[in-house]
Length: 444
Image (cartoon, rainbow, N blue to C red; front, side):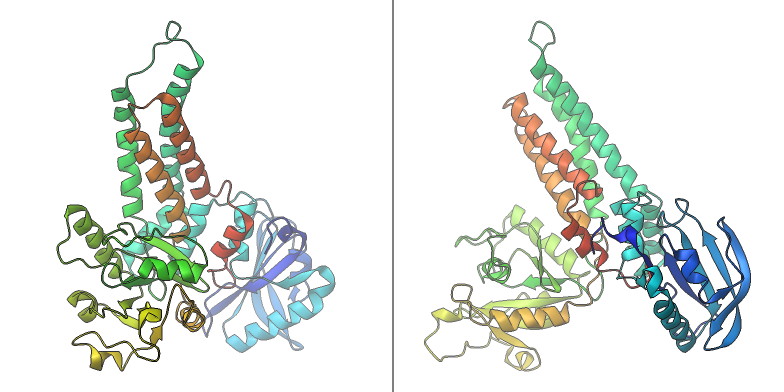
């Protein structure tokens, strides 16, 4: 789905919930939307905004219906949009949709791709990326609190927050660059304390923004849990085919939660259990535990050479989808890994995978399984998390460099601004946008 080719044709899809209901809605968007709708609807639709009562043809019969005409650019997609509101019923909608696609081929009418209406709204400047994510959140909201947050995103609440962060960073950067462009006699350099005072509230706002960003959606993201040094990060790197996670033999190397897309699944590489965690390790594990309560499920990762069971909470409270044994290349040839103590019976009910990040053993089977179990993931807000986290890290580095010189601070702030532009969708690459809108259902 390429943004530069989408406006050339007209698309159609059912935009109401599937199944029986009082009303069903077929949405058309594109330059020939009115012409295509006229293939099944009468009377003739005007070229102005209007609601027209009429009827729709279904296999030679006429049924009462009405049409909403919304000429571009004052429509959801920014293009000419027509909505046909029909009597509810899956078979009736299917018949009308089939007739539209068959007769409308000469007009360039085709079935919409998943998320394509929202993608066109983004391309035509009717939505930014945060508002598009709000629509996805609204579609999958489970409760009044999630609905309220989604409505705020659609209305520009998250976009306004990101813009306020950008404005604050621009102010700091302007002061820094002014000091770089002029001599000390022309404009004295601002003290480091001044930059800290300006950056501290920006860092706090980024922290708050990330705390309120949905980390996962039911039916979606999977959390890797297990002992420290069980091989979770090496496993992620092997599945991705690149060095995405830092790997070291020292326990506690992973303290951040790292999100990886593996085929159709999303995995979180998380800190591992430690016998005596320090303060920083305890904070990282607490963050992992909060995410575990919102993720779809966890996957246990067990070192085959030292099969220690996961923490009691992971083993007892969290829904586990499967067990991945790592480092099987270090076992004697033909020897299966022993079961973690106390979990032998539980393992008989779970899928098990025996892998090696070094040799690649078991990775093909594991990828295929992850693609199946992760195919339902939607994770509203997830594409915004990575650039916001990157902006957070850049601001933190700028604070650490407050005494090191304005040039280094300016470079970090410029990096943070680029990340915020990515979060707003200003410079997002087309493959990223394709992945984003591919999580939407048809008709949205």
